[in-house]
Image (cartoon, rainbow, N blue to C red):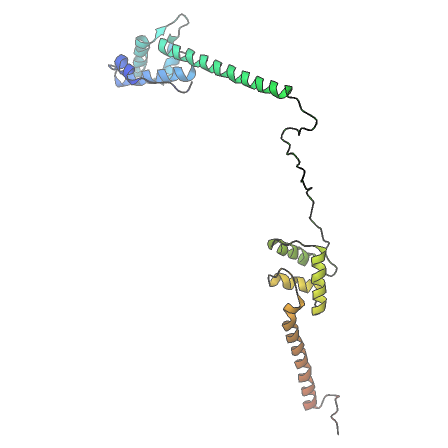
Amino acid sequence: MHYYKRNLGDYAKKAGRLTMLQHGAYTLLIDSCYDREVFPTLEQALEWTWASTEAEVDAVKFVLSRFFVLDKDGCYVQDRILQELLHYHKNADTNKRIADEREAKRRENRTNREQFVDEAPPNHKPLTTNHKPIKNTATIVATPEGVSDSVWQEFIAHRKSKRARVTQLVIDGISEQARIAGWSLENALKETIVRNWQSFKADWVKDENLSKTGQMNQRVISGLTRGLIGGNSNVKLLGN
């Protein structure tokens, strides 16, 4: 029992003339009796109150002789604490009996409950007439030919971050656009990741392709020009 009512008026009336040391001994004894739900012998009372000096031992003995009664078993009993402990246990037993009866009735009702043929089992979500089966829409696409595993896994993670699925239809579309742009599928996937695109279109890299073609033509023209000026080219001018 870890709780009890402490009537300050009653305590002051019966123990108001105690010394500070005797008040401490009495309070410790009361708390220990309620907590342990037993009454102490003299040796136990000294142990429960941690009495070590002669004055503390005398205070414990005085409180026992004044507020407790020594029974035939050598225990010091106080009637008020005894009555409250008995009342506490009686209520506890009653509450336990009521809880057990409620649980038994609940189990009986559950056992005797008739279950009809068309009745859904307990905890089962009933199917309605417009119930639509859940389809597994997940699609596994193998790593395309010519694409490294590292680029492929990074592309899948990139699409997932944009909440877009990777399907064969998506890959076929990107592959066709890469062919139109003159790119490999792997380079198209890399460009999609680097530029944070969701897909790939040939028109999106058209200017870049023109720029690369122009740079190549410029290098060819520069080479021809250097050859003509240096005289080391096999190209012959008309009229020579």
